[in-house]
Image (cartoon, rainbow, N blue to C red; front, side, top):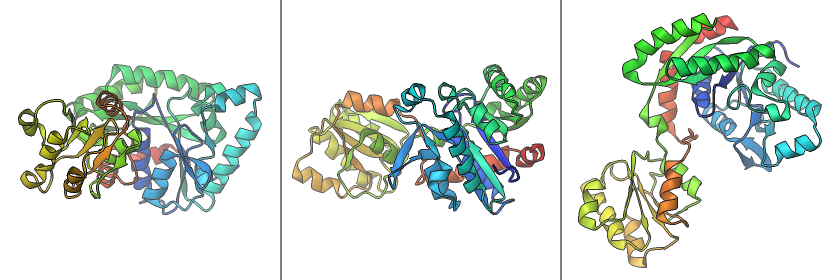
Length: 364
Protein backbone atom coordinates (compact mmCIF):
# COMPACT_ATOMS: atom_id res chain seq x y z
CA UNK A 1 0.00 0.00 0.00
CA UNK A 2 1.06 3.61 -0.65
CA UNK A 3 3.20 4.74 2.28
CA UNK A 4 4.54 7.95 0.73
CA UNK A 5 1.62 10.35 0.23
CA UNK A 6 1.03 12.51 3.35
CA UNK A 7 -2.28 11.78 5.08
CA UNK A 8 -4.29 12.49 8.21
CA UNK A 9 -7.24 10.60 9.75
CA UNK A 10 -10.08 12.68 11.24
CA UNK A 11 -11.85 10.91 14.13
CA UNK A 12 -14.30 12.09 16.77
CA UNK A 13 -15.30 11.27 20.32
CA UNK A 14 -18.86 10.52 19.23
CA UNK A 15 -21.18 10.87 16.26
CA UNK A 16 -22.27 14.36 15.21
CA UNK A 17 -19.42 16.13 16.99
CA UNK A 18 -18.44 17.98 13.81
CA UNK A 19 -16.09 15.54 12.11
CA UNK A 20 -17.42 16.18 8.61
CA UNK A 21 -17.53 19.94 9.24
CA UNK A 22 -13.89 19.85 10.29
CA UNK A 23 -12.94 17.63 7.35
CA UNK A 24 -14.62 19.97 4.89
CA UNK A 25 -12.85 23.00 6.34
CA UNK A 26 -9.49 21.21 6.41
CA UNK A 27 -9.72 20.12 2.77
CA UNK A 28 -10.42 23.73 1.83
CA UNK A 29 -7.43 24.94 3.86
CA UNK A 30 -5.14 22.19 2.58
CA UNK A 31 -5.97 23.00 -1.04
CA UNK A 32 -4.09 26.27 -0.61
CA UNK A 33 -0.94 24.27 0.10
CA UNK A 34 -1.55 21.10 -1.92
CA UNK A 35 -3.21 21.55 -5.33
CA UNK A 36 -4.17 17.86 -5.59
CA UNK A 37 -6.09 16.56 -2.56
CA UNK A 38 -7.50 13.06 -2.17
CA UNK A 39 -10.30 12.07 0.20
CA UNK A 40 -11.49 8.72 1.54
CA UNK A 41 -14.10 7.62 4.06
CA UNK A 42 -13.13 3.95 4.42
CA UNK A 43 -16.22 2.86 6.37
CA UNK A 44 -19.50 4.71 5.85
CA UNK A 45 -22.85 4.25 7.59
CA UNK A 46 -25.12 6.72 5.78
CA UNK A 47 -25.11 6.17 2.05
CA UNK A 48 -26.98 6.79 -1.18
CA UNK A 49 -27.11 4.82 -4.42
CA UNK A 50 -24.98 6.25 -7.24
CA UNK A 51 -24.74 4.20 -10.45
CA UNK A 52 -25.74 1.08 -8.48
CA UNK A 53 -22.93 1.72 -5.97
CA UNK A 54 -23.51 2.57 -2.31
CA UNK A 55 -21.64 5.81 -1.63
CA UNK A 56 -21.38 7.50 1.76
CA UNK A 57 -23.18 10.86 1.99
CA UNK A 58 -20.07 12.68 3.24
CA UNK A 59 -18.14 11.42 0.22
CA UNK A 60 -20.80 12.89 -2.08
CA UNK A 61 -20.46 16.21 -0.23
CA UNK A 62 -16.67 16.34 -0.59
CA UNK A 63 -16.76 15.31 -4.23
CA UNK A 64 -19.34 17.92 -5.24
CA UNK A 65 -17.82 20.77 -3.24
CA UNK A 66 -14.15 20.22 -4.17
CA UNK A 67 -14.16 18.24 -7.45
CA UNK A 68 -11.39 16.01 -6.13
CA UNK A 69 -11.07 13.88 -9.27
CA UNK A 70 -11.15 10.60 -7.33
CA UNK A 71 -13.41 7.63 -8.18
CA UNK A 72 -16.45 7.73 -5.89
CA UNK A 73 -16.34 3.99 -5.27
CA UNK A 74 -12.77 4.30 -3.97
CA UNK A 75 -13.56 7.32 -1.81
CA UNK A 76 -16.25 5.21 -0.12
CA UNK A 77 -15.08 1.57 -0.32
CA UNK A 78 -17.22 0.02 2.44
CA UNK A 79 -20.87 0.85 3.10
CA UNK A 80 -22.32 -0.65 6.27
CA UNK A 81 -25.74 -1.83 5.11
CA UNK A 82 -28.43 -2.92 7.62
CA UNK A 83 -27.37 -6.59 7.44
CA UNK A 84 -23.62 -5.94 7.05
CA UNK A 85 -22.72 -6.86 10.65
CA UNK A 86 -24.84 -10.02 10.68
CA UNK A 87 -23.27 -11.26 7.46
CA UNK A 88 -19.78 -10.51 8.78
CA UNK A 89 -20.38 -12.40 12.02
CA UNK A 90 -21.73 -15.36 10.09
CA UNK A 91 -18.68 -15.60 7.84
CA UNK A 92 -15.91 -13.12 8.65
CA UNK A 93 -14.11 -11.75 5.59
CA UNK A 94 -11.66 -9.46 7.37
CA UNK A 95 -8.74 -9.89 4.97
CA UNK A 96 -10.96 -9.10 1.99
CA UNK A 97 -12.21 -5.90 3.64
CA UNK A 98 -8.66 -4.83 4.54
CA UNK A 99 -7.50 -5.29 0.95
CA UNK A 100 -10.52 -3.38 -0.31
CA UNK A 101 -9.72 -0.39 1.93
CA UNK A 102 -6.01 -0.37 1.13
CA UNK A 103 -6.50 -0.71 -2.62
CA UNK A 104 -9.10 2.06 -2.53
CA UNK A 105 -6.62 4.29 -0.68
CA UNK A 106 -3.95 3.60 -3.29
CA UNK A 107 -6.30 4.69 -6.07
CA UNK A 108 -7.43 7.79 -4.15
CA UNK A 109 -3.80 8.73 -3.41
CA UNK A 110 -2.66 8.23 -7.02
CA UNK A 111 -0.91 11.45 -8.18
CA UNK A 112 -2.20 13.31 -5.12
CA UNK A 113 -0.19 15.59 -2.83
CA UNK A 114 -2.21 14.84 0.31
CA UNK A 115 -5.07 12.56 1.40
CA UNK A 116 -7.62 13.34 4.09
CA UNK A 117 -9.18 10.22 5.65
CA UNK A 118 -12.47 10.64 7.51
CA UNK A 119 -13.55 8.16 10.17
CA UNK A 120 -17.04 7.21 11.26
CA UNK A 121 -17.77 8.23 14.85
CA UNK A 122 -15.55 7.46 17.83
CA UNK A 123 -12.44 5.28 17.89
CA UNK A 124 -14.37 2.07 18.62
CA UNK A 125 -17.03 2.35 15.89
CA UNK A 126 -16.70 -0.68 13.62
CA UNK A 127 -15.14 -2.94 16.25
CA UNK A 128 -17.95 -5.47 15.81
CA UNK A 129 -16.60 -6.29 12.34
CA UNK A 130 -12.94 -5.79 13.32
CA UNK A 131 -12.59 -2.44 11.56
CA UNK A 132 -12.75 0.13 14.33
CA UNK A 133 -11.64 3.64 13.46
CA UNK A 134 -8.47 2.99 15.42
CA UNK A 135 -7.78 -0.16 13.38
CA UNK A 136 -8.53 1.56 10.06
CA UNK A 137 -6.18 4.43 10.91
CA UNK A 138 -3.51 1.82 11.62
CA UNK A 139 -4.17 0.03 8.33
CA UNK A 140 -3.79 3.30 6.45
CA UNK A 141 -0.60 4.24 8.28
CA UNK A 142 -2.16 7.53 9.33
CA UNK A 143 -1.84 9.79 12.32
CA UNK A 144 -5.07 11.09 13.84
CA UNK A 145 -6.80 14.35 14.70
CA UNK A 146 -9.68 13.96 17.19
CA UNK A 147 -12.71 16.27 17.07
CA UNK A 148 -14.83 16.72 20.21
CA UNK A 149 -17.62 19.03 21.32
CA UNK A 150 -16.75 22.13 23.31
CA UNK A 151 -16.16 22.17 27.03
CA UNK A 152 -13.37 21.15 29.35
CA UNK A 153 -14.18 18.14 31.51
CA UNK A 154 -16.33 15.98 29.26
CA UNK A 155 -14.34 16.38 26.02
CA UNK A 156 -11.05 15.68 27.78
CA UNK A 157 -12.54 12.60 29.43
CA UNK A 158 -13.88 11.36 26.09
CA UNK A 159 -10.67 12.15 24.23
CA UNK A 160 -8.75 10.17 26.85
CA UNK A 161 -11.05 7.19 26.35
CA UNK A 162 -10.60 7.34 22.58
CA UNK A 163 -6.86 7.81 22.95
CA UNK A 164 -6.64 4.47 24.76
CA UNK A 165 -8.00 2.67 21.68
CA UNK A 166 -5.66 4.48 19.30
CA UNK A 167 -2.73 3.78 21.65
CA UNK A 168 -3.64 0.08 21.65
CA UNK A 169 -3.33 0.06 17.85
CA UNK A 170 -0.07 2.03 17.95
CA UNK A 171 -1.64 5.07 16.24
CA UNK A 172 -0.31 8.52 17.08
CA UNK A 173 -2.74 11.36 17.84
CA UNK A 174 -1.60 14.65 16.33
CA UNK A 175 -3.94 16.70 18.50
CA UNK A 176 -7.50 17.74 19.28
CA UNK A 177 -10.01 20.20 17.79
CA UNK A 178 -12.91 21.37 19.94
CA UNK A 179 -16.13 22.21 18.12
CA UNK A 180 -19.37 24.07 18.98
CA UNK A 181 -17.89 26.24 21.74
CA UNK A 182 -20.06 29.19 22.83
CA UNK A 183 -18.42 32.33 21.40
CA UNK A 184 -18.46 34.12 24.77
CA UNK A 185 -16.49 31.23 26.31
CA UNK A 186 -13.97 30.84 23.50
CA UNK A 187 -10.94 32.31 25.28
CA UNK A 188 -11.77 30.58 28.58
CA UNK A 189 -12.27 27.14 27.00
CA UNK A 190 -9.16 27.52 24.85
CA UNK A 191 -6.99 28.30 27.87
CA UNK A 192 -8.17 25.52 30.18
CA UNK A 193 -8.69 22.88 27.49
CA UNK A 194 -5.09 23.43 26.36
CA UNK A 195 -3.94 22.91 29.95
CA UNK A 196 -6.05 19.81 30.45
CA UNK A 197 -5.08 18.21 27.15
CA UNK A 198 -1.44 19.06 27.77
CA UNK A 199 -1.55 16.98 30.95
CA UNK A 200 -2.58 14.05 28.74
CA UNK A 201 0.26 14.74 26.31
CA UNK A 202 -2.10 16.12 23.67
CA UNK A 203 -2.01 19.32 21.63
CA UNK A 204 -4.99 21.64 21.20
CA UNK A 205 -5.09 22.41 17.48
CA UNK A 206 -8.13 24.65 17.33
CA UNK A 207 -11.40 25.73 18.90
CA UNK A 208 -14.40 26.35 16.64
CA UNK A 209 -17.10 28.71 17.92
CA UNK A 210 -20.68 27.49 17.78
CA UNK A 211 -22.61 28.83 14.78
CA UNK A 212 -26.39 28.56 14.91
CA UNK A 213 -26.58 28.41 11.12
CA UNK A 214 -24.76 25.06 11.05
CA UNK A 215 -27.34 23.41 13.32
CA UNK A 216 -30.33 24.65 11.34
CA UNK A 217 -31.91 22.28 8.79
CA UNK A 218 -32.83 23.41 5.31
CA UNK A 219 -36.28 22.81 3.84
CA UNK A 220 -34.64 20.44 1.34
CA UNK A 221 -33.21 18.33 4.17
CA UNK A 222 -36.66 18.18 5.79
CA UNK A 223 -38.21 17.23 2.46
CA UNK A 224 -35.78 14.32 2.16
CA UNK A 225 -36.43 13.17 5.73
CA UNK A 226 -40.21 13.23 5.22
CA UNK A 227 -40.05 11.94 1.63
CA UNK A 228 -42.44 14.81 0.92
CA UNK A 229 -43.78 16.08 -2.37
CA UNK A 230 -43.07 19.67 -3.43
CA UNK A 231 -46.36 21.28 -4.45
CA UNK A 232 -45.06 24.49 -6.00
CA UNK A 233 -42.14 25.71 -8.08
CA UNK A 234 -40.36 27.69 -5.36
CA UNK A 235 -36.64 28.13 -5.88
CA UNK A 236 -35.87 28.66 -2.20
CA UNK A 237 -35.76 24.96 -1.31
CA UNK A 238 -32.50 25.56 0.61
CA UNK A 239 -34.12 28.04 3.00
CA UNK A 240 -32.82 27.67 6.56
CA UNK A 241 -35.41 26.82 9.21
CA UNK A 242 -35.00 28.91 12.38
CA UNK A 243 -38.09 27.65 14.18
CA UNK A 244 -41.18 25.50 13.68
CA UNK A 245 -44.81 26.52 14.18
CA UNK A 246 -47.50 23.82 14.28
CA UNK A 247 -50.67 25.35 12.87
CA UNK A 248 -53.33 24.28 15.33
CA UNK A 249 -54.71 27.72 16.21
CA UNK A 250 -56.97 30.24 14.51
CA UNK A 251 -55.77 32.70 11.89
CA UNK A 252 -55.64 35.80 14.17
CA UNK A 253 -53.33 34.04 16.64
CA UNK A 254 -51.20 32.53 13.92
CA UNK A 255 -50.37 35.66 11.93
CA UNK A 256 -47.77 37.10 14.37
CA UNK A 257 -45.97 33.74 14.23
CA UNK A 258 -45.59 33.78 10.46
CA UNK A 259 -42.22 35.50 10.25
CA UNK A 260 -38.79 35.09 8.74
CA UNK A 261 -37.28 31.59 8.98
CA UNK A 262 -40.44 29.87 10.30
CA UNK A 263 -41.53 26.48 8.98
CA UNK A 264 -45.30 26.06 9.29
CA UNK A 265 -46.62 22.52 9.83
CA UNK A 266 -50.37 22.18 9.41
CA UNK A 267 -52.94 19.70 8.07
CA UNK A 268 -53.63 20.05 4.38
CA UNK A 269 -57.30 20.81 5.00
CA UNK A 270 -56.56 23.88 7.15
CA UNK A 271 -56.89 26.08 4.11
CA UNK A 272 -57.54 29.16 6.26
CA UNK A 273 -54.05 28.86 7.76
CA UNK A 274 -52.47 28.00 4.43
CA UNK A 275 -53.97 31.09 2.79
CA UNK A 276 -52.96 33.25 5.75
CA UNK A 277 -49.38 32.02 5.42
CA UNK A 278 -49.48 32.69 1.68
CA UNK A 279 -50.34 36.37 2.32
CA UNK A 280 -46.88 36.87 3.81
CA UNK A 281 -45.59 37.15 0.24
CA UNK A 282 -47.04 40.69 0.34
CA UNK A 283 -45.98 41.65 3.88
CA UNK A 284 -42.56 39.93 3.72
CA UNK A 285 -41.78 39.73 -0.02
CA UNK A 286 -38.00 39.49 0.21
CA UNK A 287 -37.29 37.14 3.08
CA UNK A 288 -40.32 35.60 4.74
CA UNK A 289 -41.38 32.11 5.78
CA UNK A 290 -38.93 29.26 5.35
CA UNK A 291 -41.73 27.03 4.05
CA UNK A 292 -44.94 25.10 4.76
CA UNK A 293 -45.43 21.39 5.33
CA UNK A 294 -48.97 20.15 4.75
CA UNK A 295 -49.64 16.93 6.64
CA UNK A 296 -51.94 13.93 6.51
CA UNK A 297 -51.42 13.58 2.75
CA UNK A 298 -54.34 15.99 2.30
CA UNK A 299 -53.93 18.03 -0.88
CA UNK A 300 -55.53 21.52 -0.83
CA UNK A 301 -58.22 22.51 -3.31
CA UNK A 302 -57.30 23.56 -6.82
CA UNK A 303 -57.85 27.23 -6.00
CA UNK A 304 -55.48 27.16 -3.02
CA UNK A 305 -52.88 25.20 -5.00
CA UNK A 306 -52.99 27.90 -7.66
CA UNK A 307 -52.28 30.58 -5.04
CA UNK A 308 -49.40 28.53 -3.61
CA UNK A 309 -47.70 28.62 -7.00
CA UNK A 310 -47.18 32.35 -6.46
CA UNK A 311 -45.31 32.16 -3.13
CA UNK A 312 -41.52 32.16 -3.10
CA UNK A 313 -41.07 29.63 -0.31
CA UNK A 314 -41.52 25.85 -0.82
CA UNK A 315 -44.75 24.07 0.09
CA UNK A 316 -44.41 20.37 0.90
CA UNK A 317 -46.98 17.58 1.22
CA UNK A 318 -46.19 14.83 3.75
CA UNK A 319 -48.05 11.58 4.42
CA UNK A 320 -47.80 11.54 8.23
CA UNK A 321 -49.93 13.58 10.59
CA UNK A 322 -48.73 16.85 12.11
CA UNK A 323 -47.46 15.28 15.35
CA UNK A 324 -45.27 12.73 13.55
CA UNK A 325 -43.97 15.35 11.11
CA UNK A 326 -43.13 17.79 13.91
CA UNK A 327 -41.38 15.01 15.85
CA UNK A 328 -39.27 14.03 12.84
CA UNK A 329 -38.26 17.63 12.22
CA UNK A 330 -37.36 18.06 15.89
CA UNK A 331 -35.21 14.91 15.94
CA UNK A 332 -33.56 15.58 12.59
CA UNK A 333 -29.77 15.22 12.49
CA UNK A 334 -28.55 18.22 10.53
CA UNK A 335 -25.88 17.33 7.99
CA UNK A 336 -24.25 19.75 5.57
CA UNK A 337 -25.34 19.08 1.99
CA UNK A 338 -23.66 20.08 -1.29
CA UNK A 339 -26.33 22.73 -1.94
CA UNK A 340 -25.81 24.46 1.42
CA UNK A 341 -23.51 27.11 -0.03
CA UNK A 342 -23.84 29.56 2.89
CA UNK A 343 -22.96 26.86 5.41
CA UNK A 344 -20.02 25.63 3.36
CA UNK A 345 -18.54 29.11 3.06
CA UNK A 346 -18.97 29.63 6.80
CA UNK A 347 -17.24 26.30 7.55
CA UNK A 348 -14.31 27.22 5.31
CA UNK A 349 -13.88 30.55 7.09
CA UNK A 350 -14.20 29.01 10.57
CA UNK A 351 -11.52 26.37 10.06
CA UNK A 352 -9.18 28.77 8.28
CA UNK A 353 -9.46 31.23 11.18
CA UNK A 354 -9.58 28.92 14.20
CA UNK A 355 -7.57 25.77 13.34
CA UNK A 356 -3.76 25.73 13.21
CA UNK A 357 -3.32 23.81 9.95
CA UNK A 358 0.43 24.44 9.88
CA UNK A 359 0.77 22.81 13.28
CA UNK A 360 -1.14 19.74 12.04
CA UNK A 361 1.16 19.45 9.03
CA UNK A 362 4.21 19.94 11.22
CA UNK A 363 3.14 17.05 13.44
CA UNK A 364 2.65 14.78 10.41
